[in-house]
Image 1 (cartoon, rainbow, N blue to C red):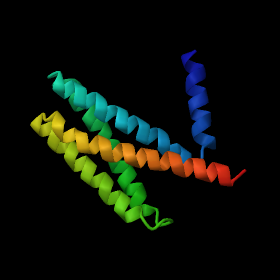
Image 2 (image 1 turned 135 degrees about the vertical axis):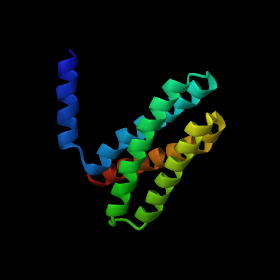
Image 3 (image 1 turned 30 degrees about the vertical axis):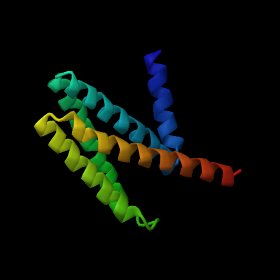
Length: 127
């Protein structure tokens, strides 16, 4: 069963549009930060650390891609937003401060929701 899921995931990645491929990254990003938030609150610092590092890596990739993608006017601003979120995650991880993650979750959730709306508009327009 796991092999089938892995094959489906690989196939979906191959046929997904770049826009659609970014959405799961944002969903995982928000999920990782929320898990880290709870882990810090529970004093489970190793769990928080792992999720924050994973989120930082995703943000680094997203920022680099946003900087390279000049196809829309907001790409530079989006890259800066990702970099700000990454800086906040580093600070929260070092200081073990769950409260610092609240604005990051808010921003990343908003970006994710904007991607969902954009994909829906693109899909509706392409029919």
